[in-house]
Image 1 (spheres, one colour):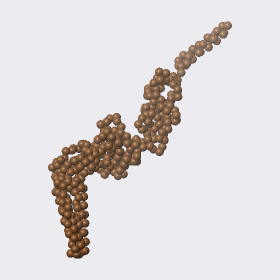
Image 2 (cartoon, rainbow, N blue to C red):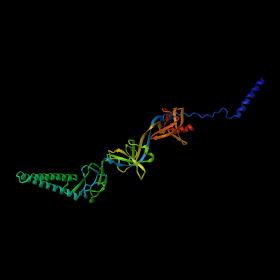
Image 3 (cartoon, one colour):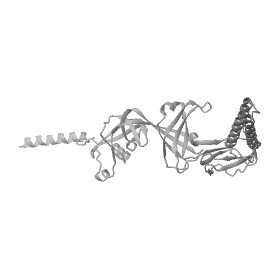
Image 4 (tube, rainbow, N blue to C red):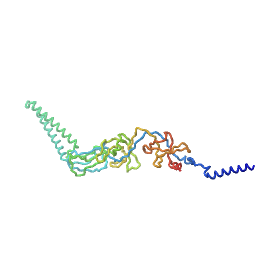
Length: 363
């Protein structure tokens, strides 16, 4: 009995000494697994990993201009002094409205030609009538009658010509030419003032009129981005005057030459402008979008976490099964990011409060 007691005491003494030498024995180095609480889970938003066609997005600078295919430029038809100019740039004019009156010697000459033509026709008619009477009485040869008939026809043709010339130039017989608006629209350019002397051979237009119901936005494309822009690409235009408002259109024209000064290629976007919201010369930001012929996995950009020069997403399976997964960004478009990495189509990622959960998992 005494021997058993001694052996038992020796055993417990050895255990005590081993425990004393290993103070950390019985403790674990494993960190508790992070579990999303029910209250937090109710507030989270999730996004599914999908396969999407990659869309390129290119932001360009430009300005609003009037549609060059839908304008009327008024050039002086005659020389003279202009008066009656009572419209300014930005004014709306109606088709046929007077925009000025040119007092012109040319118009006076056209009126004089018309009067002369009428007189010549009257004389030729009387001469023809007399020739016919003399021919019938045998006092005039047939040859002379034919000459009288030709003179009458030439007088008729001259009157028609003089009438048409005067009508082309406004039809005024008082020596004045009235400049009229050929279309309804806005005065977008004006190169004249009252009492200004003008010449018919002037290469500058008196007025430029545009209806502004649709406008052009001209944008600059640098050499490095030329391959990213094509005719027909969707385009979104924003302006300083209307922050937050997006005007949607398409690339209507690509000018396949570079500006020799700025070394940029110009593109033109046609935009409907029924309320005349967009004004010529407004600065604009143009976002051009086009689809690549390639696919990639895509998620909401709000699901991305950036830490230590690396992007991550939180792949969600259950509140106790959340995986931190590194990804690479292929491209971005609006609120969508195209990614690659150890992630599969159809998996769920946390798209709200992701950074808070990421930090808690790394604490």
